[in-house]
Image (cartoon, rainbow, N blue to C red; front, side, top):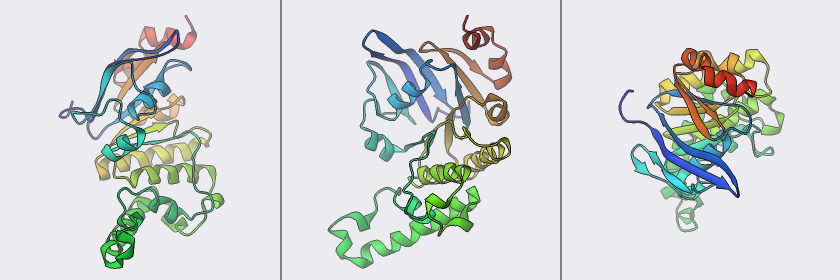
Amino acid sequence: MRGPPALRTEDVVKSFGGLRALDGVTLEIPPNSLTMLIGPNGSGKTTLINVITGVYKPDRGRVLLNGRDITGLAPHEVYRAGVSRTFQIPALFTKLTVLENLLVAARAQRGESPLWALVRGAWLPQEGELVERAFRIMRILRIDHLWDHRASELSGGQMKLLEIGRALMSDPRVLLMDEPVAGVNPKLAHEIMDHLLRLRDRLGISLLIVEHRLDIVIPYVDVVYAMHQGRVIARGRPDEVLKNEAVIRSYLGD
């Protein structure tokens, strides 16, 4: 591993009534990496993401961001700490432009404060910096030509790219992604994965992807974790995990 993990969960347990959705989950996301989380439906992947991002509080265990304990923080506090996420179905402001969708996601905007808003000189320079950041992200994602289009005018794949861009406006250390290539054609899915590699390399962030389209995503990832019935059953290089007998049985239902 290249240095300490960007994100680590330690022995995380989460139950809903009599159902133990997470049963002692420990995983590490290396810095500047693209890590994939796989497993059949109901294996606990989304629950783990929700624990990391503060939607659920774990019954036991810890979540560490670059060594800092963020266990049990509220979602907005986790967001401020440097963890962003995207969803399978993009939740965009459809009446706003691409640029406006990006700008509303930026953290700690001085112009949003009732006090600072009255002092134009106090927030205007930051506004310019945020616009520059937005265009940098749009160029990486290759949607800068759409900057003045309403989100409602975008294709499904472009909406997913905008969702990714909006998450990046918070300058995250770790980006969690729920099925980023679901519902898009294979050509565009590969383009999205290429964009993610560029984001990893140019912005120096770590990514954790939950995805079912293994044939498309596997060639791009560094590390794979496999879950089944709330537990991690395998970890390693993509080729190793996909050949793991326990992983194969989990998908076959044995």
